[in-house]
Length: 559
Image (cartoon, rainbow, N blue to C red; front, top):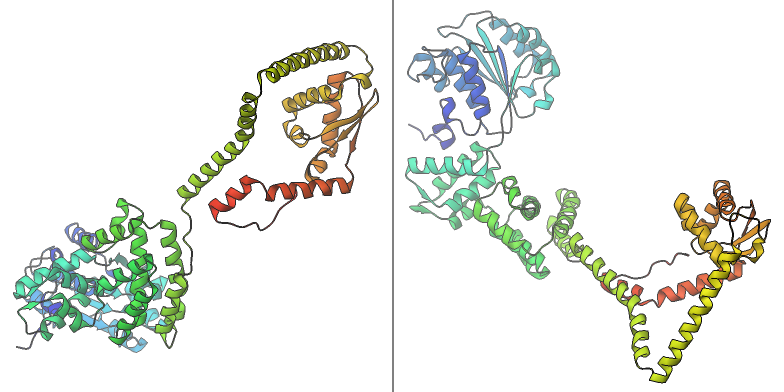
């Protein structure tokens, strides 16, 4: 008897043997148990995940002598014929090579004949999306109302190419990619049955290369079995036979990126190229590796998003321990953006080398927590600048001779006495309930009162007038100096602001006054702006900010 490859030899023969598609097998089992089997089924999913296998098992379950039954007997005529693929009542058709309208018409004409000895005549059409539009149209009416003894089962990897009119007539089942651990466990089971010793690291490498496809994994495992005469299959031998990339190389690349060792990475790329490995595929693995590093950095709960063995995930977490999420995001963004260049390049080696050289030129973005810490430090420094002159004055005060202190105390007492007299005079002069000579009121005291009243009812207007003063005032007019920005001038001169200002003056002095806004001469304002600019450049607060954030002055806006 000729050799049977592992993918055929260990093909599942019942629903319980199907790997990681329980959501589909349970649905079909429940349909059998409840006698609600649809006349058309569509199995969708990636290659090698069990679409045709499930269709065969379902066909056995429906046509078994003891059926319809969830677990076929495997001994009756129908079960054996379906397993050996020569059943006269179960037709497996390749949609890619039987896609014309004439072939579908021939199929449709044969539907009226009863099955030879089975319960149902079952048509399994693989890669059904390859049928022509005319072939689909010829199938429509029959698919909607087939004879009672006919069941259709379609399989496809590209469900988007199937017309909506066909989809609406089928019960759809979506199969999933098989995870890495399930593939490794199944291959380990087969190795035990075949009495072949192979280490878990090699199985993990094969499973990763299969990309969720069980059939691909078993084909690669078959190749390793055939190509070695050694009793134990090692990881090194597996790499050599299958010409696969050692996953350690990916970790070496990321480690050297983090350590800024560009020469080491260029050597890795060169050795990979010399081994004849497909650099475009190699680059795809690099992108996937940095994606996994980023996901791993996001926390313990993100581990389930990485389809890798536990030891590799632990190594990734250790490698990214001192690397920020922001920097990993930058790296991955550059790798993804340049993928198209490598994909269509005639010499991908040079493109990959230049890409990694470019990676070393980017600067690490500052994490938000570090940024907050630096802002806090800058804030503390600003407060320190504010308090230092006061402390200096206090120190000089302590160093004065005793006679000077006494003289200063006497002066302060005299000043307080004078100030008290002034306040009494102002209180006597400002009587808000009686007519008075407004020009005799102290302008500073009046303006403080105006500002207080503005802050209560018109806070935004008060903010625009913060640096302003009263220039002149009499019983009819008041002239105000606006010592602010152009924006402050504009906001105060609005009619709404002027009306509010008039009301506040009337409530304060008891007289409705005409308000005039006085703008300082242009040359005075320009001189003030120049002074502000110079003081800003020499301000230690600005100097320290530039030092902390490693920045430079780009523009100075007028205040």
